[in-house]
Length: 259
Image (cartoon, rainbow, N blue to C red; front, side, top):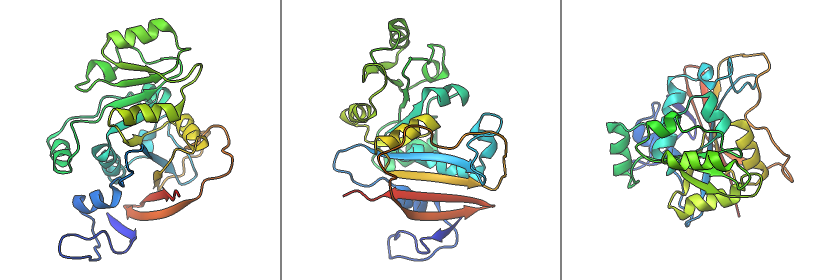
């Protein structure tokens, strides 16, 4: 993997230098979350084809490659919590964040606690108790739902070990949901989709960073885009923070400049 921008990466001990190849430690410094003085900070992580498709045959797997998966894993390693919409969790057959020696070592070295839980945004509490997010979890998932969700579904998920939070009446109030995560010490939030959740985060002006991989594929078809939802009051300007490339894949990172 190589850096196109910046041409000189964050400094290693001993000074700044330009590197043709990027090590894991350099990626950590490049993608690390900023100090946000206690407020939640949201990074979204997506892969798209060159022509804008967000999936192949209904799933993102067909767009991904080894380098994209490396960035995807790094997003989880550096986060306090993984945020995902229920539709994506079901279609992509989500499982808990995997505990591995490398992940544990990295998080301990960086002063991060444990393995990040998965927080699922679901208006109807559509996740079922037999989901691998519950049956295989070493860290209980968090269900971000609303009062209008069926009571029996909420009760079943709580019985299966999930933490169920009601945040809103007929839909999930995302600002309240992020505040609820932050109140639990989960401030570094890595959103992995789907498009409807990302679209609502944009509309609510809650996106601080977008990590977008462009796959060297023309997918065609009728696949959707990475964001679908209500229009924000105005488009949110982002600044280009880094560009990496490897084997035809472009890894773009855009960051919001907030005042």
